[in-house]
Image (cartoon, rainbow, N blue to C red; front, side, top):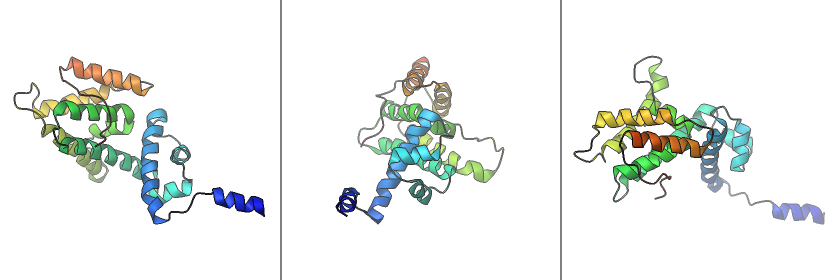
Length: 196
């Protein structure tokens, strides 16, 4: 009986609804990490384990892989937008945040190459296209007058750099992204996530 009470005391308190937001954020962060390490087809069980939750909690928040990947992409885009809205934001800093997300998330790279040719189902491409448009808008609003790249060139440069982001480790992918920006003659600020 004493042993049973000891185990009950060690169990974390059930925070109920307050835990939901924390669990969701942990799942999104874990999905970004696991997918960067193992690819988009990584086991969902590994994501749940990394987040410190059971698979039931994962499925309550994200009924399928697509909804989880969509949440990661949304968070990536939101961070780029927040960086764009921050006081003193400038294009090099935004490109640093963007480059961090490129090195961290293979799914984010696919987003930036959203099919705009009209092929395939409109529904399948509308969400990625909308997210990609939000990233491009954030970058274009900080394109200084007289910059060597036009808004259209900037969009093409992002696609070119993202295509170069390959490699087995984050460091390899980041190094290649920065080399691609250098080849294009574009200044990039510190490569890091936006932290407010």
